[in-house]
Length: 119
Image 1 (spheres, rainbow, N blue to C red):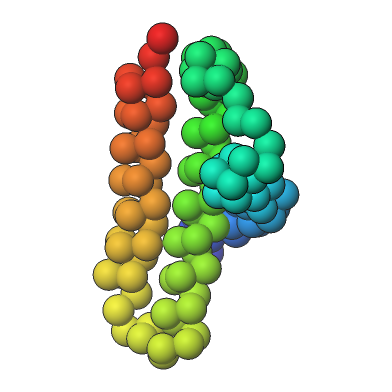
Image 2: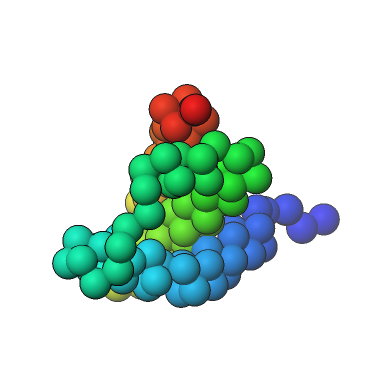
């Protein structure tokens, strides 16, 4: 019997993270990195953003977006190291560093999202 791996799950998360990042990151960078700081668009009030992020579904959506984007980046970095640098002999170390970093960063983000941004 063939050994089951989690590789298909990682590819699904890679794909979902890539799609979400491609759709939402450019507009977020444009708004929060360019338009608001340069005064092209009036930024929303702090209370408005805080009330928006206080809703549990918004928090869940932001968490899912961040998690999938980080998994996408970890998967891309993993295969860049495998194929680009030809260091396949460090398979376990690369997996632990890439996916462990993505999961640890997601846990830290979840903590910030649920505890620091509480109303």
